[in-house]
Image (cartoon, rainbow, N blue to C red; front, side):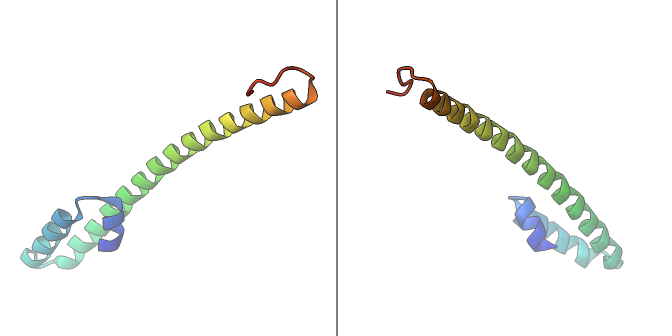
Length: 86
């Protein structure tokens, strides 16, 4: 649980300290741990989805730029015109 949280959250020391303190104070530590794990999984999934969206957007931009450059180079090779990148 701590390893997953470390990946998802930068300020993991505070979270780890709070979780440990809660576990020591509460007698019913099992339910607290389960609840914390559920929150971590939910937040981790949300962060993963956000990261995936950012990556997809970047890939679309890069692929579009590469396609445009390739099309220009192909056009220059097929049509006898002065080179655009000379």
